[in-house]
Amino acid sequence: ESGLVRDAVRSAILTCYAVEGAYPPDIDYLKRNYGLAFNEELYIVSYDSFASNVMPDVRVMERGADR
Figure (spheres, rainbow, N blue to C red):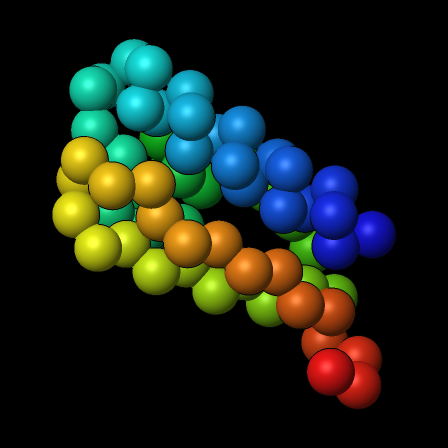
């Protein structure tokens, strides 16, 4: 479910912020440094980071889903 993926991404974002004092620059940073993993064949994650001190906007969409 996309809600679980969104929750996992947000959890990794908050962990990064707690550890480093800054939000991560992109989703790949979370994959490399915080073990974030999700099925990229099923989900698309939109990650919009404005600044290292502003919570990124995260949207998770199921591939092929009508939205």
